[in-house]
Length: 286
Image (cartoon, rainbow, N blue to C red; front, side):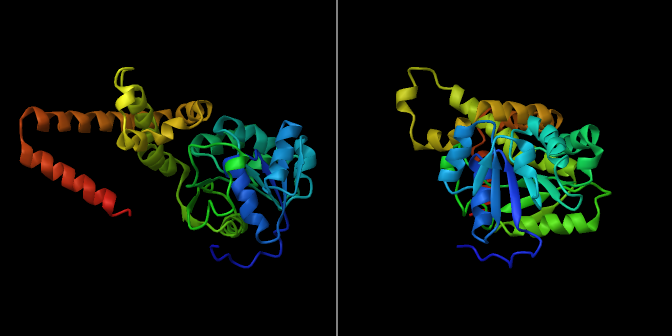
């Protein structure tokens, strides 16, 4: 198990709104330290599944009941639902409580929370754990999913230091490592390393015709793994981060044209150098 810091004295009860793969993994990671974790889902069956999986200690179908008395609320819903849930959670929390999230986009979420509920915004520190899977559901959650993984914090410019410190202490308790940046910087970078790669994976999955599909091998399967992600969730991410994604698609189109020219000009030395550079970049991450 990843070594965890000593649990802060103030961190005793956490509510997770949306106990799926990521929300469930956050809950499991916190329960290792003795934190009491409460889950919220609209359906009673989902609450029972979260309890049975060991992701939460108890579950509620009422947000107010789920959030009442909690030190931290983690919103683990699709990105287009986070701001509204943050507003609802804020109505049931003490003023010192922290609201955070796991959304894959940040700038629009931060702006929407401020617009919908300035009060909740004063308690909100946006976050994005760089952990997950193409699989969904609490049945795929793991207490070690966040161990050693980066969690990006994107606090508002006017966020009080005390609240930021609470967010840092909270996320460290999940076994993660912290990175801080602005919401806009986050969205630009994630478009490059996550959002466009997902779309490219989906494009590759749709490219072969029916006659070619029986011939696909491990390379195609590796390249298209993330295309199995939830289309509803990814459609919302693309809408939230449209401009940054479009910018990266334009950049990729230019790079693809450059690669085409290398092939069309029959320049094996240039192609070999390009492949070697790409391999070195990939190998450096291993």
